Image 1: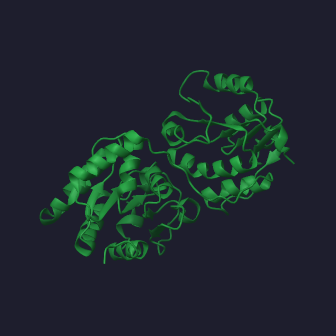
Image 2: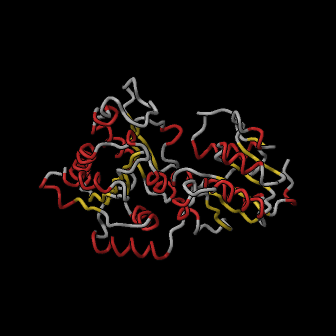
Image 3: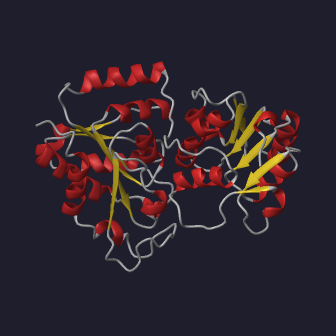
Length: 345
């Protein structure tokens, strides 16, 4: 049992991608409920800094630079120096387990995975593949008897990023436009819906909803974004826009102003969920039950009839049948169910 009076400094550990870190923000309001006076620090990797640095619940961000020499040793020294009372290791890989063990923290919480259990004296759930990734964080808090009733994902939007997005929208769209964002991002190649399929989806959205299509992209997605636009029929191209080059926060602010979004399983999908932009996730190799968009303004679609669905392969050996064979009308029907309450009458 954790004694509240002895908790002055807390460290959360969550490495990996931006989407994973967004999902972990669900714990912050809960921790502040049980430990209102405690300073909460967060150990993550550099790409996720924009996800956290504007959140009022976060005191300080520590960086794990895995490509830097001696990064693990430097991190251990920094964590030891900060003398945390409670460390919650939501990542629980061999490196973060060692960091937690050597922290000298009184309470060290992590998942009881094989080869890592030695590092902790408090444990999250042992079962895998049972809870949605966001809910798993709440189940972890429950396991160590911490308040876990708040279910809100958090994402900070700076005033600069909001102004950037508003100026772009005012210049590009009319106030009554129904703007649907399309995001071709995806951490694995197998998770990326092919550009030509996205082009077909965009055309159907334009015909059925008179939508304006805004293609959101990051540095690794630019070629796919251009291919999506180039695949649109000439008579519809005036309704399709390629978003400008943006930072993570600027892109998020643009997503927040969109009427809805269609996305691969990716960081932008989880950002849309956190910003409460209605989002439909397209799924193939990964599980929407574990990793789908979170919250009431979200949905997902996949080709359940395929034997290979949810294969978890990083690359597809059969030419992405989960996307090419997924009926476009099924996607549009799911999208209509998702946004039926927000389409102008």
